[in-house]
Length: 462
Image 1 (cartoon, one colour):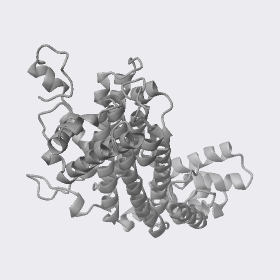
Image 2: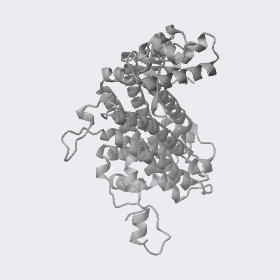
Image 3: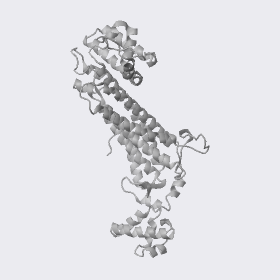
Image 4: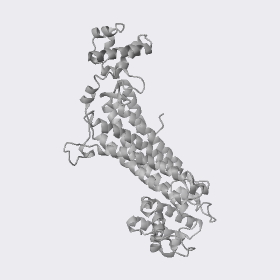
């Protein structure tokens, strides 16, 4: 296996050592970013006179040819992507290729490529979050009056609407977009030129490479530049947070698509069948998102565990930072698209949701609120309504079926007109506090969301 080092070694490393330390297969994820960083470095070397401008241009031309050829033209029997590119560059440019590594180390080189990769991937993630938000906003607008049960403790709690429910997910994604933008800002600093750990004696221009690569500025301390992996930990944390919310949406779709709920039919294009049960339509994509969220969480823990005992300076342990990053970002991108697809193609069973909200005593709070509004202390009202619920259960009737005469039997202190608040539609309509599911409150919320969505990026909302 070809390496960029070995002159001081008297014998070759063992085959197992080579295989165990090899990273070329995972490094291919950021082969383009490594070339981009090398182009900037070569140009800077020529501009400050460390190499001639002609030599710099030869290097840049060779690197661009490598980029045109793609990763399939690279030698895979090498230690890492840096080695593969440098070997290919030597084939194209001859001995001048050996000058590319002047005034840099693989330590700052790999950190630069990783930051550029994260930069590019975050742009894709931010766009996908916006796409899913658009779908959620459409559901919020279309179904702001579609009655359905609301749950706490996975038990029926109060009537809400389907639009109200999915607007909650809209705002969660707004926070994730805001977090990802902050990560973009904090990670966007250049380690290039930090070399192995202590900078270099060559008269390099770190500001020039930082500017060309689109970074905010060079990292001020060379040791910090090559030691830091907090930006990858932050990326893994943001990825895990996004996946957790996508998993919650997926869990709802799994439950709601079952016959026990029957709230939604997922499209054939997003479900799978059974090898022996012809009637099955399995929500496999939702289940896989739910399952792979565990991997995203584990990736953060993996790197945190790697980093917790490392002293400053590059350590080979940090070779383990990139596979979790590639894995988590890949899962986030796929999962955002799949959740969007499932929701866009969903067939919402509106009548089933409206029917299911009846008979579950979920308007009991409305009766308690009615009594409290008439001057009864809420705790007293709570106890009175609990007595009404028990009385209905004993008689085998629901709150919606309660008549004035039966109410008088159960508790004559409750006025007959209180029955008017027990219908689910009226319950939702009365909840007009800011952020509630009432028609006016939903109009305000949807308008707010539309305004936020129309803005560039993800402004902080709360």
